[in-house]
Figure (tube, rainbow, N blue to C red):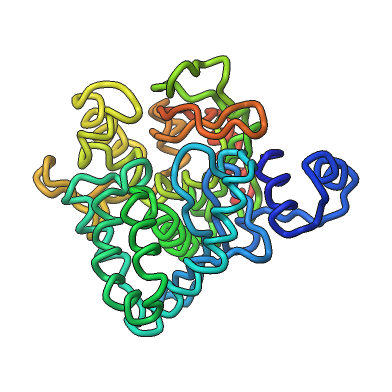
Amino acid sequence: MRGALIGAMLLEDLAADEHDAADRLAAGAVALRPCHEQATVGPMAGVVSPSMWLFEVRDDEHGGTAYCSLNEGLGKVLRYGAYGPEVLERLRWMDGVLGPALAGALERTGPIDLRWLMAQALQMGDELHNRNRAATSLLLRELAPAVVEAAPSDAAAVLRFIHGNDHFFLNAGMAAAKAATDAARDVPGSSLVVAMARNGTDFGIQVSGLGGRWFTGPAGVPDGLYLGSYGPADANPDIGDSTITETSGVGGFAMAASPAIVRFVGGEVADAVRATRSMYEITLAEHPAFQIPGLGFRGTPVGIDVTLVARTGLLPVVNTGIAGRVAGTGQVGAGLVEPPVEAFTGALRALAEAIK
């Protein structure tokens, strides 16, 4: 997160160099606010700065709106704490070219039905957290003609960038998940989990019946596959808002729809199926639109219940990228991580007190 904040300071011309940026941040020269408190989610470090374009996702039925930044790709990127010249150059291109081209395209297409698109992607092998290849392809198909019309001189570069980034859809999907879970907030007495997030130190959850209170425990280090010569000693503890995908019934909860995900996060195909099946034991429903062909088109498990987590001892399955623990390193791998049980038991105790 420190690396991403340094990069954001440099991107916004708020510091002369990385040392100046670090000093200004430590001195409190800029205001920092949690994404979730701004109806926003950010993957990994989650840093959103003023010049960045955002996806805006609207829930037409309940009136909610949620936001997420645009996805940079994998490797040395801001969300993994990298802030070198190539990272800043890419971000400036995204601000000056990619964002305006997408905005112009969406003015022509009108809103895109993300719920439909995500349902289709699940049936094409995505789980919508660490595998978004089908969803990105479907989104590209929706946008491509309008991008050509809106930004003819930049269309080739824009379409090439999206085509080369299989994770591009992730951020739109995260905003959709945030809009969906926010609709379930503030139901008196409800034990439904409406947010899960990590900041590289703590893992926290929010529960519908307990307002905006966070219940936390230590963030774990993911167990998975590492890039190149990296290993567990290079890994930062779990970080980011992307667990909003699991909160909404996809990601780790939909791994049975995506056997290929095990090649990215480790394990065997049977492990992916077993992970999804186990999540039905701690959730309140099956998603009516997000269906898994390999389970007879059963809906993904959705609606984590802190009562069921405490009763069964099962914890939500989360698959995630792994950031380097040294600021500026970038991504070092991907894998699975268990949330801390005390976040769920703490929320359950508070809920019991609240409804006495």
